[in-house]
Image (cartoon, rainbow, N blue to C red; front, side, top):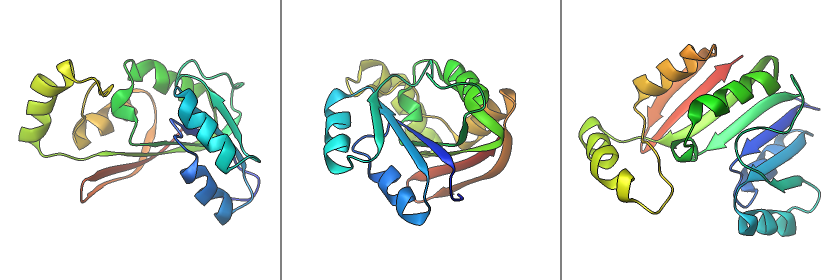
Length: 161
């Protein structure tokens, strides 16, 4: 991340990630979330940052307007990840990057969760993805994989347009 980068945090929650990024470099920080309560909390905590109640797609930013898009523990909630990825490709600048953190579960737990828990869950989960599924999905939508790794209960991706 560099000075002046335009950053979009999708499903920003209470804004903590954007605050942390803003402390590392002077960025133009934008956060969106579908939860009015989360956006209200983010605005109260960090009034100098742009937070808006918006869905993950369509993204209401112009083509090639973002340097960085972050998604922390929310991608598995997106009911149409392909539409979200198309929007990210559109709004990311050339060589723009996405940083994604997702839950990491073993194959058996992931299978059981996707088959028996997710369909009946009221938590908004849509699908828990494997490392291979994530890598394949981002590749299929034209992103270049910079880094992908598991650490503890997390799966972390860094991709480039």
